[in-house]
Image (cartoon, rainbow, N blue to C red; front, top):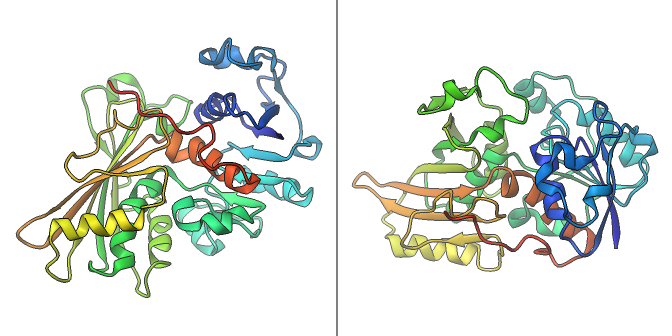
Length: 342
């Protein structure tokens, strides 16, 4: 049994962490922090959790990082906030899973360029994509949970890049649900602006671009030239990613599927679809990444599609997967459930 605390528990990722952890037999939830909601029952903010386990009796606490004493801490805090909190927890020897982008880059300069923030200092962190870094995660004290777009993109592309059968110029097109923008409403996420609409944004400058590039480059000896564009679509949750690569040689669809099945043969949360194209309803509420498509056009362009739930595999579920690995638990504990279809 381990004790777990969540810093920043009022948002969507905090809610999902609580929902999944409440069913984990090896976890005792100790603190859920919030400055604004100090003393408020968590089920008032997250009524979907009412009546589950002992969550009705837990309240938000306005507690400083120095006063947190638990085995694991999830930092569900905004970019820029985690770097002010994580070092204090790190010094105390606690195991940390940070869901912000503050520790995803080995090169602080890259972070500062793309996030337009001054970093307080590098710590020894492991990038928390279990399919690529499982053994390092098991030994880590600090895991940087991947971004939601990078999770779906990297998993869709990794086998091709590793195998070396595609050119180094890659195009990624992602469609995301509104929950990816967080719990606080804005003009962008206002219902009349989202409903019956598709909004491309940050067409060439999204900060997840270098995160995808750097992880793919670790699989090859070449620089990856990635072009990434996200779109906001009128759904609540999920990311559908369509990747476009160009084959260096003639490889048929069956061979491509074999490459993916071999690469992910021991991965419990990656499902390869050799006939159907993945859908968001197939993964909604689950920690799965579904990958399919594998079509090649007459110009040698290979199209691969991935689908994830941005709040689960793209955030909280993956964070708990990392916790399971770090704690030596069965890595699928509390996470094996299918998508909510329909």
